[in-house]
Length: 313
Image (tube, rainbow, N blue to C red; front, side):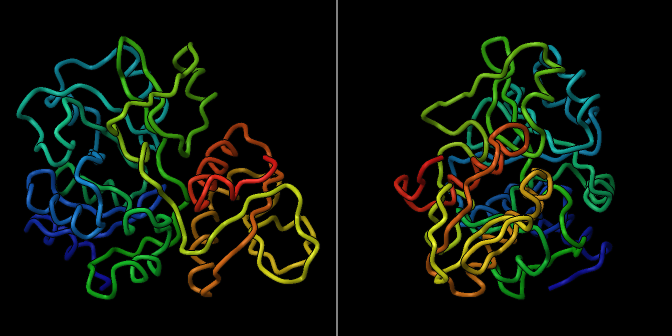
């Protein structure tokens, strides 16, 4: 159910959940001041309750009251990447944030989105808890039509068009006196490392410390098979690139040299498989795995049903 900005604002203030656009993907937004609305997000998504959420704020000043102290290089990261697709997980003061927004962890994730609708809604309401607007495990929604596919016509949403980045934010976690990588995302790792001045190491705890760590994500119903050796058959469908010729029908991610274009089209391509009731599909795995391509590759790996569905990459 499409709503106006004013209607969305009032629904948020009343403790309701509204889907809104960001520059990365659409999010299911609820006020940080309404723990019951946060519970509704978990219920709507079918999301495990030990999977923490991201708190979206309007400016850096809204973060400090929640934190014991802001970690080293926090302000440098904020100045370089906010507003934008970077989330920072930092220790917080006990009792300042509802446990269900942070899965009971002593830390919380924060982000300042750059999408004008999201920022203005936060400015006129409160900080918003906002995971991606999709059923848990499914490809994230990058346009309003995807919301109806997952949640039906009753979910209120603001239509902001097609999301620019197309993949979720990159997440950094401050732990053991340094920043570590929690999730690959829309900002390539080398760009962040240039600000930090040291290489990012992947954090891999048994318990999720941020979204996108240990649960199967981004998966269509179709079984995906990634390969660099495309089968020479006219049967089937391949997720591939517009500058290549395939023996079978292709759903294009864009040009094979443009990682930003591939990220932008990725989830729409995965969702198209389900829209067309395609049971199996190939993925052209002949692309780089550096820069933003690293995120595209990681998302496609997670979208594959089984590890043996990945061949020759």
